[in-house]
Length: 329
Image: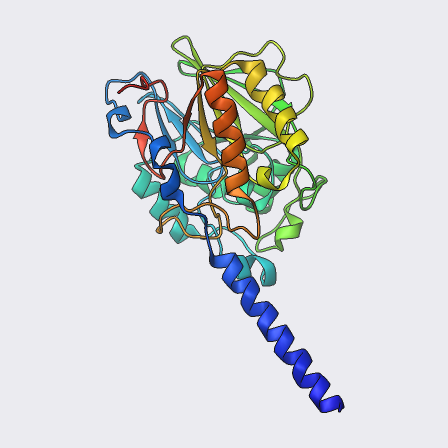
């Protein structure tokens, strides 16, 4: 009898693991949203600034002379590696991604918070590109653990305006989406490889960038600090939607009001929607249903953008484009 029970239990366990594997590897059909793709005509060589979306909240903003990068996460270890192994930067993957994006020099890197899928690679990317790492104390502790020189890092002052060539950069307090993994901060260097749980969240930020009279807001996580964006206007908002589909309608509405209604953009470009356990050598796909409800998010965002007359877009990985292109182009 006991043997039969053990066999049944083993069968259920194997079946359960198999189901989890299937759910973790399945993805919503991105082709349903092909009308939201950024058109090839937006790849305007004469544009004052150009953007590249490189997955999660990694965004390169460049005017050809100076450039700002958020996060710089390129290693993207697989889900099972993350869950069952210690992780750290994969220099080969980082170098391949930088080469594919044509990134040789960066002036400033700003991690929007310090979870591994945002800040783990930031110190290595700073070393490879000569960038100054501008981040929270937790992000700097991750950098110290990887041996980045103190001269190459700076603790960010929220609200302060930093000048990077013709760019004006401002970092504002924000919050992560609800119930984050590994909240808290680091007060000591984090040596890698380390468990994903050791990459403490640290402080979360919104990043406001101004150039040529235009303003871009990067909201790297689907969270907000109530009232912080009051009085802030942006032409384009890069809107983080990771885990937004798992939140309540009330939360999604509040997020929209605090970030979008407040800043009044003419365009929203969605970020942090992709499955970051897939390498950048493969096409970007939405997070699996096990992790998020992409359809619920898109139904909400499309409806609200349409009612507000806001142009909504989903960027392709590595595509270089003018963020202010005209919708009819």
